[in-house]
Length: 226
Image 1 (cartoon, rainbow, N blue to C red):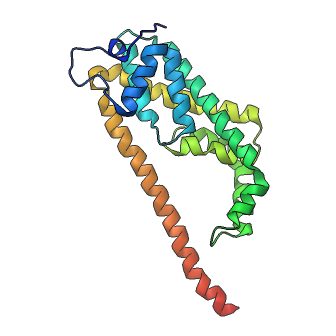
Image 2 (cartoon, rainbow, N blue to C red):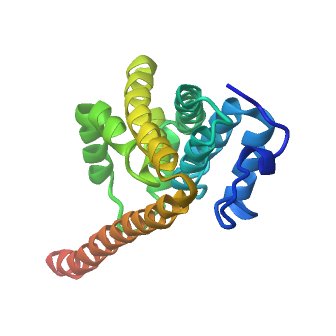
Image 3 (tube, rainbow, N blue to C red):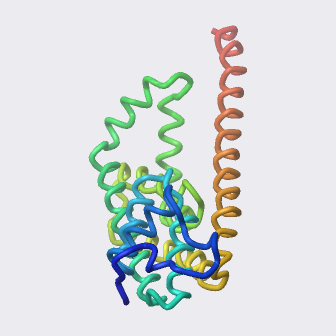
């Protein structure tokens, strides 16, 4: 692990457009430039807590820096995975503090949400929670949010940590290696990874919209039977 004082030193290259400048990429480069591989872990921790900061941007930068010999590749993968785990613990704790009773009270105020549906969701998570956490850690946006229901349901912390670690290790390694192998073209990962994230959000919105329309259609029928 080699720490350098500035992002420009960390990611210096002869290719004009290879170095991140401004925005999330520039911020991540600055943190890694000051802290080295632990900085990659810190940026990934923030990404895990705040899902609007995409790891598809942060991880390739860390891989690019490792490819330039500025950081150790194994250290980057290790620290980013540690960051993912610690960030997931923070979100898990928020879900645990919210708790089941508060969640149900909040959900009761949402139109078209019934206690029966909440019971079904809880039962599903009890049966499939470990698999859900494992797979969700490899899905943009969802990888951050999955820790909330895990905390609400008080999923055993050991199992939660294990599934988070495995899923995060696979995701982080893939994107770090892409940045490492692509070198000066690491921005291709950011570009296409961004499209994947937008696709996931679009699918989620479509699912919510379909659920809402189905509920709207059922309401007149229910009132008529009443």
